[in-house]
Image (cartoon, rainbow, N blue to C red; front, side, top):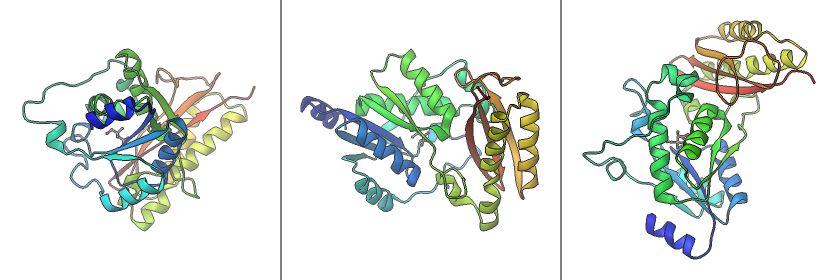
Amino acid sequence: MQQRADQIRRDGHTVAFVPTMGYLHEGHVSLMKEARRQADRVILSIFVNPTQFGPNEDLDSYPRDPARDMALAEKAGVDLVFTPDRNTLYPGGYETYVIQTQLPEHLCGLSRPGHFRGVMTIVAKLFNIVKPHCAVFGQKDYQQLAVLRRMTADLNFDVRIIGAPTVRETDGLAMSSRNKYLSESQRTAAVCLFRSLDAARDLAEKGATESAALIKTATAAIEAAADTQIDYITICDPDTLEDVAVIDRPVLMAMAVRIGQTRLIDNMMLTPPA
Ligand code: PAF
C-alpha cells in the first residue's frame, strides 16, 4: 500500500482517504462521495481495529460483509480498497500508541476508556501507510472527528480532515453498522435518540437556555422508549467538549444510549435564536 501510495503521488494525483471498519452503509457511501469531490483518487480502508474495542465490547461479533463492501465501494467510485490484516498492523512486539490528554476525557471516552487511544493509533498508522492529502470522517462520531482533528494538528500530519454530515434513515435514526444488532422492536425504540435531540433543538431555537432543562426533557423521551438505558446525555462546547450550562451560543448536544445490548450514539448542534 505504501508503494502504491507513493506511485499515485508521483503520478501527480491527489488522494482522499476514507478509513472504515467495513459493513458499509449509506453513511459510508456519503463519505466516499465526499472523498470523490475532494481528490482525484479515493482510497478506502476496511479494518476492524482491535485496539479501539474494550474487553467487553463487540470486537468478535462486529458485523462483516466483505463482498457487499467491495460492491458498494466500487459503485461509489473508490479507486483502491486497502484491507490489511491484524498481524500486519499489530505484529508481535507492537507497543506504540497515540494518546491525547483532554478531548478523550469527555462523552464516550468516559465509558470507553482506551477507545480513542486505539482510534488515534490506527488512524495515525493508516495516514502513514496511505499518505492521503485529505481524509473524510462522519460527524455522527463527533468526538472521534474532534480528537482526530486535534491529533492531526498536534502531530503535524499533512492531511486535511473533512467532516461529513450524519446520514439518517427516513425516521431520523442515524445510520450505523451497529443498527444491525437491533431487533424489530429495538429498531422502533432506537428513533428516540434522534427524536429527543430534535426536540431539544426545537426548544433551543425557541429560546430555552438552561442545558439542565433540555437534558431533562431528552432523558424523559429516551426513558419512555422501550429497552433503553442512558449512558450519557450532554450539552457541551463543540470545540472543547466541556459541559455548557447556559446555551448562549451554538453548542453540541451528544448522547450514548443502550437499546438492549446495543450502544448507539448521536448528536446535534443546538443554536439559540439570534
Ligand atoms: O469510525 C470508524 O469506523 C473507526 O473508528 C475508524 C476511524 C475507521 C478507525 O478504526
